[in-house]
Image (cartoon, rainbow, N blue to C red; front, side, top):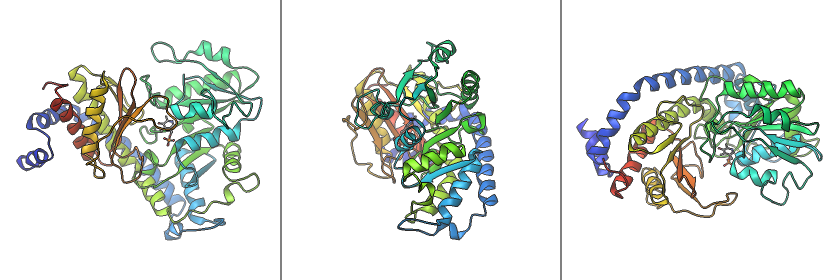
Length: 427
Ligand SMILES: *Cc1c(COP(=O)(O)O)cnc(C)c1O
């Protein structure tokens, strides 16, 4: 369409970059159809849960103070529990982010003398201080919880022998990170996670298996809680918030685990009874309702990026043809300059703060300098189009989100344009 090309040109996208984008999209159409099918299933799943729990206007009323008898809050937790097929759920604006949700889940279910095991290598950067892998006041380590880790094998699979050896009488909880985070290992499918959980429970049935589900929600038709996870944990400013949730985190799981989480989050004895919703229930319900299609758009963007960048020789994780288990696309750009150029493009494409220039900085909770491009309606929301990465080899940029596929497309085209303009890529 002539008109569209002209519009893109006024935004700085050259005809050559646009045409390359169109050719790439033609190639991946069948995969878009598959994504839409998964979204359709998940949409039905969320819709059915809302209908079953008789969501009504009364659920959207704001509460303040203690938040006793908060109908909307309590019902949203039932909706989440039904979608994740768990006995219970804790879904709260008082959970400030994903790291906080994971911290609550861990510290509520680990006691002094217990051991935590990660059978999937080093956990996400911010969790390292939570666990005490990097020293921090109030870490689990400081409270007498020990930690053990089994790295993945060289080809990114579970080291079953190592895991078997690592499990001992102290092992209380296993943390399984679904998404690769800031690593270049593969993201696990829900089926793979199920296999790992079965293996662990065979050795020691009473181990609590927790899955860090960040970025994984609604990518497949099943969730880790469908394959034996005792707790699945995530952030509402990622997938399940659908871009509308202004804050929050969730923990879905067994009643025993979730009750403990609620006691940890508020206070022993109070648990889920307190916690006012502060008037954000509409956003949490509506965001959850939109989440399956928002995730589908983000997935399309990720696949588009891999297929656009891989032909230039950049290693992409996952690669252009692999199946997807989260919304993150890593592109190994090989240099700090290329990371900056990529992020500039994403930033320039944003609806908010498009005039800002992203630069590497020392972000709290992270060990290396981090560059972040985000022009989000909700601060730090990474279901919105965003790109970030630690400044360290292989200089990978982690690209994710896009509230709509079309915005993701624009951002990716603008990132490539920046690399072309900086003469880092030749068309
Ligand atoms: C984002 C993320 C977290 C932490 O979430 P925040 O909301 O940034 O605190 C934890 N684990 C994984 C895998 C993540 O992607």
